[in-house]
Every structure is written in structure tokens, then in C-alpha cells.
Length: 239
Image 1: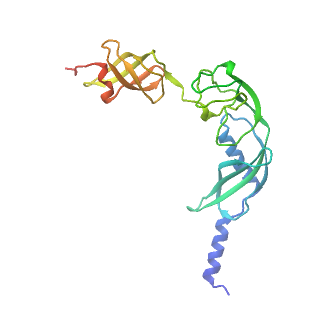
Image 2: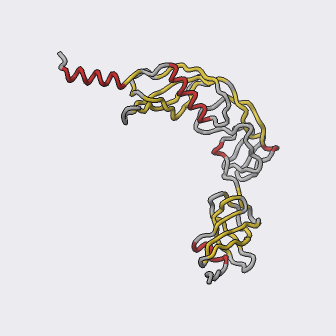
């Protein structure tokens, strides 16, 4: 015979857990697709199966998807975080994604570092992919960007294939600001190399010929800090 304490414990556990229903599973997949496809492109899908183990009361949050053998079939895993405590439960759902999306692919061989142009790119309809490697949809501008790896003709271009956009070009004039001697100064310098946002770039001061370093802030703009600003020149403190 169970004592009263055991009955109360099992009653409490039963109230704090449940089996997910189809409507909330579909809602969770809808939310995950909306987050993954930020462009708002409508994606059709069918829920084929899902976990029916008891889980804490809370909301389903799908986190990672992996391809299955069936065409368009994906297994998406996630958790259900309790709305009443710190408890979590694992959850999975098997879906079939229906349809295609217009994506960028390589029209001919593309080598790393080569700027992309219309002759190297084409748009094709490919099956919708839920993988962590995000494809680049056709309405995203790629011309002038460069890639990190060699692409053979017909290969899909993924977001992580793109190298950071170059904001400062070698030989270009860059407006540099710095704080020296208690004063804020700005000069124009010549870049000695290409650089992306956040990278340090070597610059040359045309007034004194000195070389110094600055961090790229935006297209044609950089900021020199610390020892890197010595090439800007001496600035007297305000009287």
C-alpha cells in the first residue's frame, strides 16, 4: 500500500508534467522556421512524428535540425523549459519540409578572395534546407563580396562561405580619428592593406610619412588607439 506522502508526490508530479499536443508542436515548428528564415519566406511543412514522453509544463523551443534519409525530412531537437521551475525536458519532432527556395549558386568556378560579380553567380530553385549552414536567398546582394573557399560550378553559396565585407581598400584614403595629448584629432591617411570591420589596418600618414595602425569602424573610417596612433604625429595639449 502507498502511504499518503507517496500519493501526494505522484499527484504533484502528474500536475507538473504533460504530453505535448499536435497544435503546440506545429506552433513550435512555425516559430523555429520564422526565426531561421528571417526574410519571412513562407515554408510549408508536415509534422510526421514527435516525442510523446511526459515533459514539464512550458513552451517548446526547437534548437537544431539534422537531415534524414527521406526527401525533405528533418529531425528537429529542442527542449521544453518549465514555466513553473528550472526543470527542462528534451523534445524532438520529425518534419517534412515542402517546397523550394531561390538561392545563389556558383555559375562557374569561384576562387577564394575573388570578388563576386554577375558572371560568377546565378539563381536556382533548390529544396528548402533547415541545416545550420544558412543559404543565401536571391534577394541578398553578393556582388563585390569575396568567399573563403573554392566553389565548383553549381555549388550553393552559404552565408558562412562569405568573407567579411572589405570596408577599407589598399591605397584608399581613410579618415582616422584619435585622442592624443588631451585633444581629439582627425586626419586622412592612406591604407597599406585591405581590412574588414573591426580589423586593425596599417596606414601611412602622408604629412610625415609615418606608418601606424587603426581599427576599422566603417567604410573609409578608422580609429587609432594607444601605441597605434603614434604615427599620427604629436599634438599639444590645449592651454
